[in-house]
Length: 305
Image 1 (cartoon, rainbow, N blue to C red):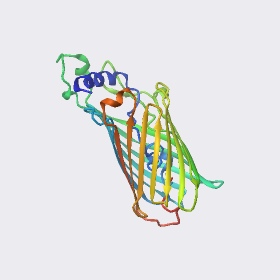
Image 2: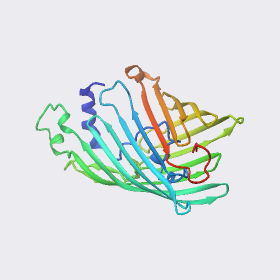
Image 3: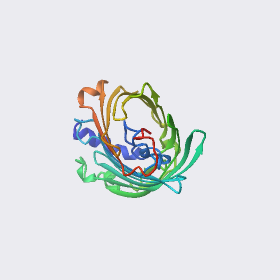
Image 4: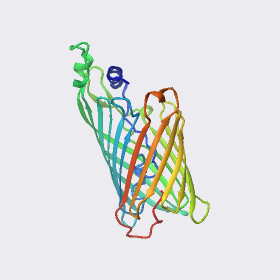
């Protein structure tokens, strides 16, 4: 995509903006706090995760995402607290979100149920000066603000056992839009502009050395088509994971993970678009690093979820 075409898109985009940018992620099992505040504390240890995603490699000014999450259980595991820092960019648009996450956890049958809330701020930055303007007096460019500082909230619930997990969430549901008259951002709590996530997965023990984990992510937005990620991974000796996924937009995903030791896990994925747009780009890359600082209590080996 050349810069001229992208410039047209980003000029039109803010006039219709109702919600925050929400990046794709292939590793929603490893870094679930990025989409569900109720995941805070669910790894039963102090855990830190960083991730980087480069979307649509080969397109200039393509989407990029950086995520840092830190969380741990407190108060006899009844409470999970976490911090999420996320930066997303596409073209001249960049937004940075900082969220504190609170989860109340309770025993329920053979597992734990967590109810979560995320609260913080999002900073929007738009580099209008990078656009090549046809009319220096264009009112659309003159009125638009280059930055904004607005509140953000997330809601979610997460239930997990040793064998399976289920999560439902509304990440960053407080919507913001641009006022056409002033060019300033304003809060517009329109739930038709929010994302709704459903995740689930089940671990099947094949033998003493091998496990199978199918998982599913459904992303629903009232104004867009439903996005579904189907993933399946093989776990070898709790050290190596190999998997494949399909996203219902002509995208095939290859995934690998390695548990380097009891504290460090590394994951990588590559997305290949076999649709008509695929021939114009070199896919998408995502890299995730998870570090569990200490196993101060009895936890389930290197936790899968």
